[in-house]
Length: 275
Image (cartoon, rainbow, N blue to C red; front, side, top):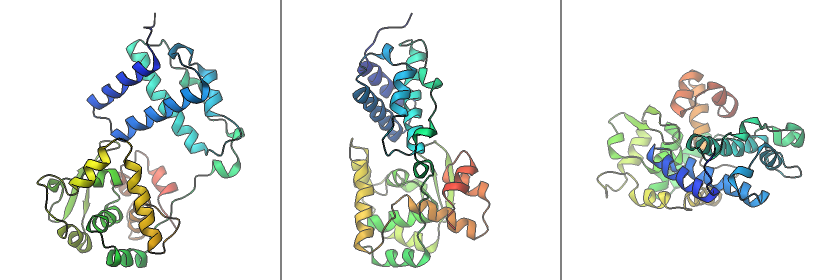
């Protein structure tokens, strides 16, 4: 028999355990946000009343401009939370396992993943010359030349920086990647103030780890690009740039996928190689 527990208490226990096992803060926050959105939207307050019909009605809601990919992401968050609840005995089954994204409820344009754009070499050189902030100049260069996510960059340690390579365990999938540094990247890192014995960006790292502050970095970078006349791009485009440039130089898709931390090179080929 399932243990009676509120959704809020189950979520608190879930978040605490995810931190213990080393799940990234981003993953924990995503699950917390999506579960709470479902509870608010469906008005279902009891854990034992969350069944496949409730989840399906929320995931496959019509009349909403939500892409198929976003719906799948939301469903994965619900699955993760309910799997924990099953393991703890809070509920007997995981009804999210029965739910699928209904593509009939998704418009054609929303079924297609919008491909991120790549920075070209002229844009890269221009920004590296004109970005005034040492932080953003180094972070941008690291993103383009290593493919690391912004969250991983903000938490880089000086011990990760070798003479020729940056070696890091990525935050999202806890995978080790080692990327060779160019002269441009080494120069950008060399200009950073060595104000902290452990981290390259101690101030930004502290802010990033504060609840509700992560999106600020992406927004500020978009504003930076806008000031320099570059539209329709974000910091995530640095990963696309890394993959695109590596492929043009003759890199194998499997190796590029490994560097990006992708479990499947299909993801790399379809969404990260811009031609």
